[in-house]
Length: 263
Ligand SMILES: Nc1ncnc2c1ncn2[C@@H]1O[C@H](COP(=O)(O)OP(=O)(O)OP(=O)(O)O)[C@@H](O)[C@H]1O
Image 1 (tube, rainbow, N blue to C red):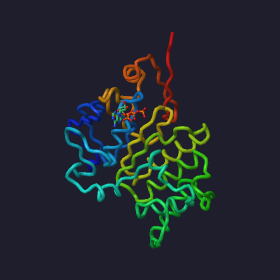
Image 2: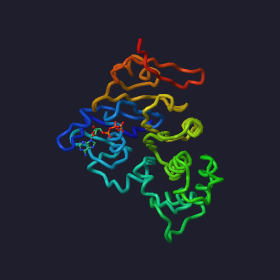
Image 3: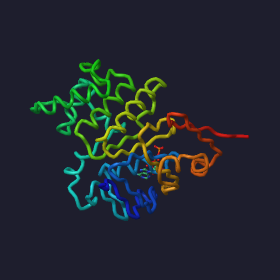
């Protein structure tokens, strides 16, 4: 197994605030992690480190074997797929769905005069099929529903066959049907033999797809718990991290649900 992410005693301080505090965490290439925790816990900051958008203030962070601060991030970033709201905002509203996916091959948004090879076009066609985007092929990105846009973002993120896939709240703002479709697609993808290592931030345990193996529970910039999914996503652990009594249940197909127990 290859270590795709390794944080050693990592802290991130911004404007005098300690956002991450002495984190030790590793992600192996055959693992798919969900990151949970209250608002402000530091989840997005971890993704910013993992996507080589940010350096730690202290400690050592290695991404795909390279230490942040000692590697050319422009060589590292193309090996990492990212789907997040800030990235989606950079996609031109007028771009067609097919071009949004295809242009990932050149790490650009907005098609100009790049020459795409057959292999890129074929791969884009495959991604379109796998993420149920064929019917939207010629639609302008800006005209899509939230659910459709999320599928396009993830299709774009996997287009380059990344070694690490980072998803920041992929199901946020989706209606029930769109959420379930996305969770299903992500689960199918996560369970394919050549799926990359994945780290997905979410607020809702209901959104953890099949095929996810581990969970990181953050609170106040520190790791509250980390390990195999069913050891971390428990009522006891979540209650401690969120500071209220929570009950977690698991359905036959392995999906989680959480609710508060007030009485
Ligand atoms: N540049 C900055 N300067 C000061 N504080 C910052 C800065 N960036 C983030 N923070 C703070 O760091 C904390 C962690 O932010 P982060 O976005 O990583 O949390 P999160 O767990 O993703 O939160 P949410 O669930 O609300 O999205 C927050 O309290 C945020 O206000």
